[in-house]
Length: 113
Image 1 (cartoon, rainbow, N blue to C red):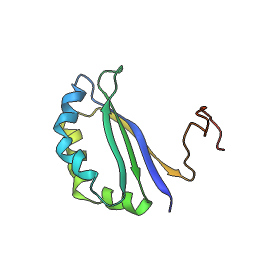
Image 2 (spheres, one colour; image 1 turned 135 degrees about the vertical axis):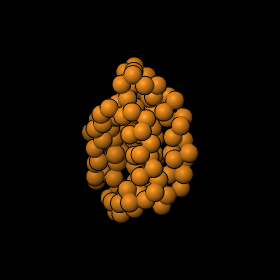
Image 3 (cartoon, rainbow, N blue to C red; image 1 turned 60 degrees about the vertical axis):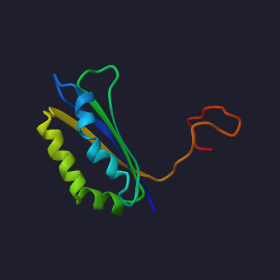
C-alpha cells in the first residue's frame, strides 16, 4: 500500500494564526482517530506572520479519500475560510520509499541506502 503525504501552507494576512489554530483543535484532534491517519499536524510559521503549515500522512489513497469525503474535512475547510484564509498551496505526494535521514552510525544522508 502506498502512503500519501500532504504538505503545504495557508495564509491568513493580518490574522493571528495561533488563535485560528487554537480554534481548530476540536477538528484536528479527532482527525487523528480516523482510519488510516498517521499524522495530522497544523502549525504556525515561526517567522512568516499569517502563515500556517499543514502536514498530513495517510496510510493509503483510500484513507485520504475517506477523510476528504468526511465531515471533519468539510468543517475544517469551512472554519478556515470563515477565519479569513487569503491563500493556500497544499500538495499531495505518493510515498514510494521512506527511510530515516540518519544511517546506522548516526550520519545524516541524502541518498537512500
